[in-house]
Length: 220
Length: 314
Image (cartoon, rainbow over all chains, first blue to last red; front, top):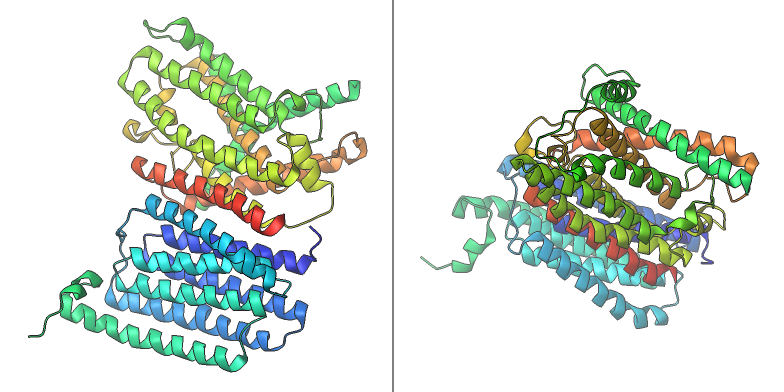
């Protein structure tokens, strides 16, 4: 271990990110899920700021600020409001039971770590060892989207996946160009609002937020 | 060598004395957080004293095992408290058992506890014993995995080496230990019969795990078991300190650091006890059938810690 302290902190924050991804996988309540999502955004922003400071990449400050504003403040607030309005804060049983999901999650983590090793060796950044964790977070968020049948957890899974991708970009290439990041952030924001409107329509049509009703759509 | 023996005796004696105090402190913090008026800090000592002065009542069907078990459980916990470094590192007792043997020591106490509970043949006793076994067989591998994560970092399963590597050599942040710490907290709630796995202050027999096993005990036997429970909580706290917050434990042979070590220990225990009370207040006891899921999560987190160690720290 001859890493400098701020890189060790980045590694620690990467571990926290993975920990939160697992906590999301095991979380039954939607409100808990939203809180965890906000914490994930916080960890992400903190690690981005430290990477920005230690490598003097100024555009990373902007993306950190964007993350903090959108993923820690605006989106969780919007989701909390949605949950209150839709009155859907109850225990949700996922489609596969949680211990099995966690086991699949561990297998995904091992897969991601192995997958990232050769890629990380090619990357020239100081944070390249966290690439495996970023990939694992992406896969875990994907797994969460697959195993949840309700609409809001699926959207949170989608956003957590975006978090993982953002972290992967930071650790492999010190982030994407600012224009791309701004575009992605805007896309995600718009998607969240559009999906928010969708939630109301889904509930109006099916009297439930369960997306399996949508498998049997028929024209009338 | 003599100073080592003296220090060892001091450390074990201190554990014996501090354990009920820690229990009392946790109870006080819990009462404060729940808005009740708190019992006195020394309440566990008063309870122990009261119990030691009573006459023991034994069931007709009690065999020798039932009378023998409290002494054995107490002895196991005293031994464990002597092995874990709290004040000074590398004392004469510590090579007696590495972390794996320590887990075995806890298991020995637990087996006798369960056997004694089944010995009387009451329904609640065997119910408690079975639940305890269900919880502990899931908690044990997770605990071992936590220890293995720390062992990978220090290249040794001996606690003095682990503490030495983490506290007295070049400071480094270990992300894998963050996972191990969460897993350790989950395991220690299960092993110490605390919320969310078990409620230590419950009076409902049907929800009991640990309490159901000791319903038949009275007087000095009960006192020994209560003291052993306090010692177990103390030992687990000391283990948590040794693995995750080892700064302050005096290095081997460093006598000047001892007053500071004592101060650090008391401070860390006070903070740890308050944190335990806080976690117990904001969590609710979960259903028994959620416990396997809870402990399975602990195991997976510990495994994840090991994986992260290989990714980030090698």
